[in-house]
Image (tube, rainbow, N blue to C red; front, side, top):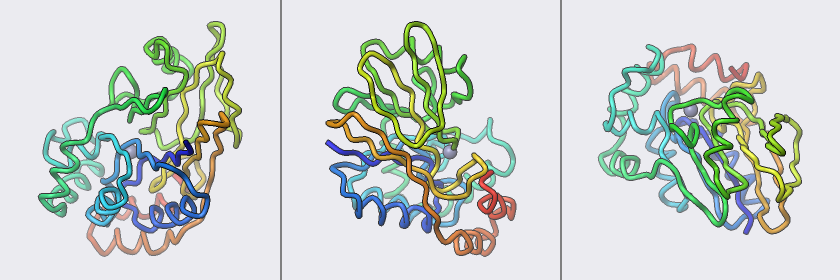
Amino acid sequence: MKYAIISDIHSNLEAFERTLLEIDDIGVNWIICLGDIVGYGANPNECVDIIRERNIISIMGNHDVVACGRKEPIDFNPIARDAALWTRNELTTENKDFLNNLPQAKEIEDFLIVHGSLSDPDLYIFSNEDASMEFHLMDNYNICFFGHTHVRIYYVYLNNLIENFYDDNIGINGDNKYLINPGSVGQPRDRDPRASFLIYDHKDNEVKFIRLEYDIYSAQEKIILAGLDKRLAYRLSVGL
Ligand code: ZN
């Protein structure tokens, strides 16, 4: 099976559509989304509609939980909270129900997908120390894909040693364990504003990270027109 793994779309329709165009060009069996379909951007319903129409396998992100009304944004910063409540108001009942029914984590073939981490969907994996705890929870699984940080990276665990890498390709070695983050489609935070995702070829044991330019200006314009915080528009230009 060949998978496209995407994460943190955050209602950015321009970035999402550009990414899907590329994925269709490549040709995959399944598209997997690691959560945060909505929040921050101006097109929450359109993004959820696409996830539903295209049968994209998805799990729930911390913004999805709040947007569908299941949780209040008590631990969100003011900008994220306002955007989440704006999104809740915009979403149709059907799309809220869809988000509310997403699982928190999932096993696919022989690998795992989570939003933040295995131990807690809200927890960020930012360091080798954070990754260490997660590797110990992976049991017999070799690969876990995660999102939430909006930063493309992968961690490798072998013989009690953890290393992290930013290169474009991974040749999966069955003796190692991997924690892999595809980066964010709709709000990258690694100082590269291009949409980020990856292709995982399960049969050939290969992972390839991909970056794409998209129409950032239109996404920004819509955020401002919707009355969302202008900083949510500006950050898209700088990838922060
Ligand atoms: Zn996110």
